[in-house]
Image (cartoon, rainbow, N blue to C red; front, side, top):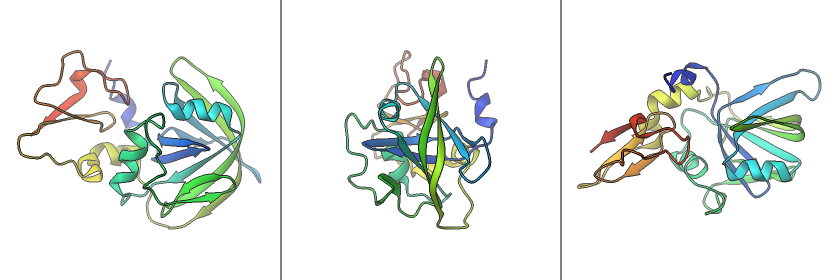
Length: 198
């Protein structure tokens, strides 16, 4: 099976935050209507944010635009909150007890109402309790990110440095050779899904 097939499903790019951390997510959907619609967001179980989401009762989604600063994706997508304070160098505002990304196209704050487990991810359901649209610019889709991730992440190499870029998530491994048994620490794909850039 081609593990890239799911990249053809259209969805957006978001920063999911809760108290103590956050991560980049793309599997987000509105699953009900009414005054306080339900939002579903899927979070990989190995992510520290998943652990935090189980402990906390609120979360927020910041909607990313095509002109998002590379540091936001690099900080929230390629680092673990176990190792760094992701909010340290990113402009954020506290809304209802959770941080949202400044200059995001919009933000949505939810009260967690349920969590559904599967083998690799947890699907968290939340009731919208606050939200604001900051811009009518076009949101970044997952497909756009995949097609333009070099531009979005501003991937560059220094003289003598070779970069290996994950074609699934954009993670960058630096080294002359990529080990044959290398597994992407972000999305879990093997070395065959990496592309060499000199």
